[in-house]
Length: 196
Image (cartoon, rainbow, N blue to C red; front, side, top):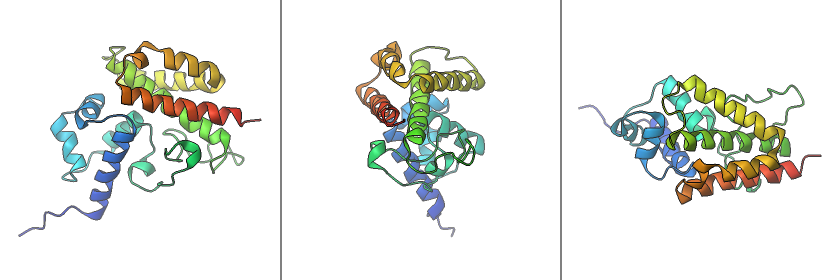
């Protein structure tokens, strides 16, 4: 008789996925499944450690949650008071050291600004998609829009704080989603004030 106990790696992944889903403001598995455009039953099997997602879906999960694969696999669990409890890992698409040898590898204000700006961009894109903006757009278009929003935020973090929080998708979001984006906007502007 085959043992049905999930492997420790699969169990850790399931726990991380559930925790990161909740931290990103998706209180129900159904909401994240919808954001990922997959069946809820399929998604909940990942959180129950019954099956493992494909590499393509892992990258999509990271994009939607605004985390790195390392965070998703529990390899980057450092929690900093500076980040408001968020993971200190680099944002997806931003490899460690991507800015050259002088790129911050710690919790420097520049790195924190980049991390939280990316998370705000990802969350805003997710809220806009859920609010009906470009729902049928290909994933590439959504990534391009997220990247453009990120660049706009980096160019003017304080101005971005105003227009992000005033965005109709944010204003009409559930309270916990508003709180999540507000937390990242606050961390982003806090980091921006510390950059000289």
